[in-house]
Image (cartoon, rainbow, N blue to C red; front, top):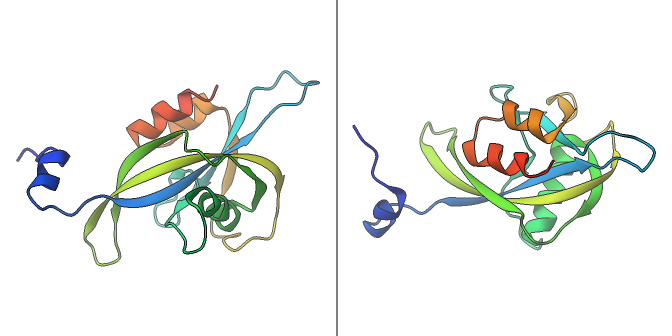
Length: 152
């Protein structure tokens, strides 16, 4: 069975996308190296697949601040967040109830200044620094792949 286009579903009373925020955590090379920019990926808690730190908006925080907080909680990142999103992607989250929820994820650049070893989800997730091109190959979401490729 063919799925209804999203905009038609919205017009017909279908529930709108939930909003999430993500941190595109970048490590930039210094002038003395020939390294490219690197992106920090983390493993998801349920399947172990590679993702970027993401989560729900937070009361009392801007969307950019919430993305930075997710980067801390999921990856131990300390850094500076850019306050304008650089892009977005859509994915389907499977809730604990078993129901699917379509999520629109706004992505914010985080320039990583420090990576802590002790953080809320340490031991539950893996972290990996990769080039944007390698990150695009590891994540599943089509629009996130495209966004990551623009970071090179």
